[in-house]
Amino acid sequence: MMLLQALTDSTLAAPAAAQGLSVIDLLAKGGWVMLPLGILFLATLFLIIERWLGIGSNGKIESQVVDNVKDFIQQGNLKSAESLCRNQHNAAGRIFERAIGRIGYPIKDIETSIENASQIEIQRLEGNLAYLGVIAGIAPMLGFVGTISGIIKIFYDISMSNDFNISTIAGGMYEKMITSGSGLIIGLIAYAGYHILNMKIDRFALRLQMAASDFLDVLQKPVSSK
Image (cartoon, rainbow, N blue to C red; front, side, top):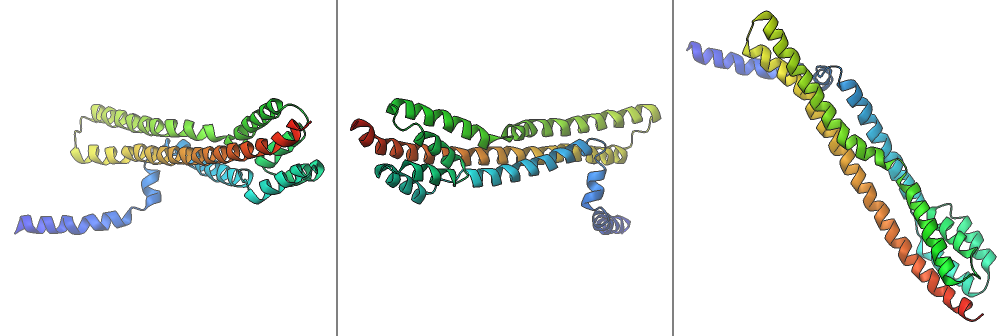
């Protein structure tokens, strides 16, 4: 009966303790490492949102605009084609505007101009994307540093007090493992964001290559006829 009563009391006490520990309190128990991890988390969210919006606005290639540009070129109306590209205010518009300005030169020179402009625009789209890769590597390691430093402190306290209590060790361990879990979650978010954004840039580069190929095909007739 005494054993049954003890088990019942512990079962009732566990949910009460769990309910009394909020997420904020749990994170606060992680120690000083949670501050840089919090900064890395905010930086991760900022970089993902900023690059997502930047790639979305600058990485547009509207097929209708490309068709209109080709029509203007076939009609010999280069000023309208250049003005249309300039008004797009995106990477593809700037690339084709530069290519239109090279019309009259050999096709190879125009193709080189498109390739150089494309590389510049892709680097602009990447922007601060490399920082996400850095955070994906640093955050888990920083979390492990917090855990290891916490474990060192636990065993140092034990050596000084000679109080080898399993409850003390378990309590300190779960508190210090919070930093490892937080670091892994932040690193996972940064890692996923980095690769998802790179996939968007790769898709833009593929569409840009297809549009540039069509653009160069249109230029073959006016250039070869001269």
